[in-house]
Length: 243
Image (cartoon, rainbow, N blue to C red; front, top):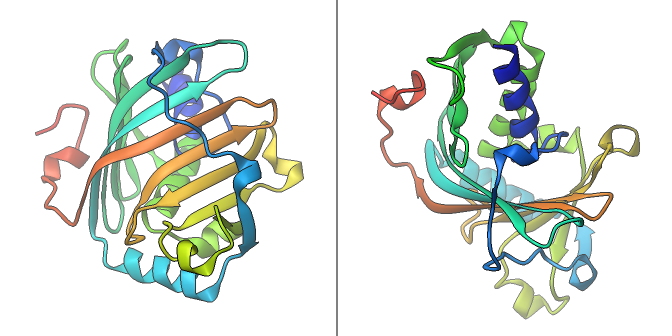
């Protein structure tokens, strides 16, 4: 399953805000109903305050499960159309996770404790893996769990984090959702310029991720229909086929 492993690694590292670009074959060409990226020049940046950090941490502590649909849009400077894929995400504290692309190419994985299974529509069944033996999946798990748990200490160790605001008017700023701008170290950033993360109004989960690349290309991941603390059947985290 070397092809499956390579596909998942390259696809998922972008999906979970790591450091690879999703192959164009993994996307469908979409029309003009596009999400607009936030204009970076219209934002004001300031240090991440203790108050905001505590709000995110408190909200994360209340979250035991998350379930969300996502729509992922890739914008390439060489094409007029966006490239679109859709999927589902499940998380249950402390160490259960399912990340699944549904269209246009079905693929994904589940993590349960120290291991899991991954799959791709071009291959029958699924493949088992152990995190302590698979550096690629260990990296993927680290990133996804860091976002699901809002693990700011871990994120700080990998990015420079500032708050992004559309206005400096304090009254209006209070009405805005929390937005964080994450910049990787120059020596490790590679193609990645910065990330813009938007939280839900109550800060309990991430609603939008923007991944901006140094060449001007960017990806927007919108998380929709998010359910917080709903019961998730155990079979969701078992294998490719949900039981």
